[in-house]
Length: 481
Image 1: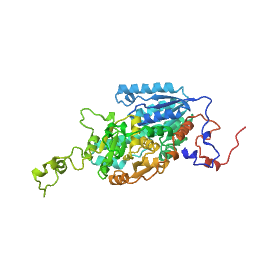
Image 2: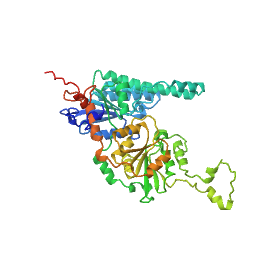
Image 3: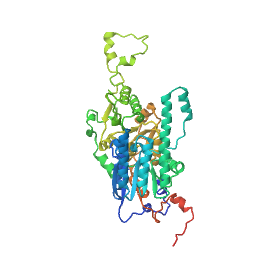
Image 4: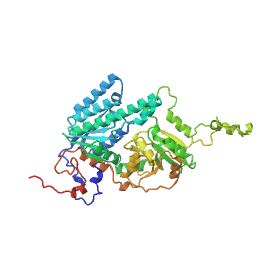
């Protein structure tokens, strides 16, 4: 169910939003099943949910142990199954259970993920599942597979088949489990964009579906961050001029983040623009004996860090090149003229408070991600709540997000560093809209209250519910005496 169906957008409705669900005389007990691993964005969202729902439910968070669940060793996989069964025994006593589902947090193997999800779903009296990634039922890519086989690219062919098998198992397996349970107990599904809303309703055939973007910060929390954050919190910035313009990118260093696009854009911006990279290599990607992570090396290369003119000319044609050794030797082996080492600053992997403080001090927050099929993004939600100027790549994820928060995000085409540079240098396109956001932590609370509350004749939300405006067009039925 879209939040538009019970928000102020339907102002003509006589149904007050306070009637979303009926609060019980006591606060019901809600179990949230999620990872607590601080390296995972799901953990940060779960922490925010605890604060948001504390006055509605008695909340207990059950941590999914990633060491046990993601191991491929047979003995540890059995311990992972035992870990899930222990959680199942505990959550059976709760009034409602909310599963924060990112498939990888339940295991690496699709069969493990589906089996463990089935156990958790069965144990809950009343269930809501938040899909942080909703996988469509895939079609097998016959053309790609046949091409790889014809070219004898056996590894590529195996990868295509393995990816299809994984996506098919987790998509079909979890959907089948929820369709089975929704026939005999209350089951709700929460997604983070309207594309997933339609897929959940029409492809997976879930009855009760709510959509809401990720929400982290209340107005008071955002105000406190804005009031107390300053550049002096970050020692790396002490040498910068006070009028230096700061561009911020956020998240673990990974190929799909597209940070190299911002570095390339920096070449086309004046000298007073500086790039701050808030994030580091994910601990799971730290390899033995690796001198440097490949993606970090590629970023340094794009910034021409430690490069010389000789490096730039190495391998290039030398026809017509005439150098006076005494006059040009220093230029030849000196710094590359486009070396950005003084304008690119690696801020490191920080805790949540410093991460958010970094957003507040930046003149612009850039999200240059590649399209990888994500359903949501935590950094863009936090940046909107803080009123930051945001420039994002035109991915489906960010386009869907902007439907909830119109006139807050400026877009550029993926990888187009020249367009990005021009947008950064131009004036801010949209004014700050923090006071007028339609989707906030309060509306997020309303969704979770509706999704996890008991059925009641007084509640306007029921399986297959329609919007208030649609309900007014349908004939009313008199309640049975």
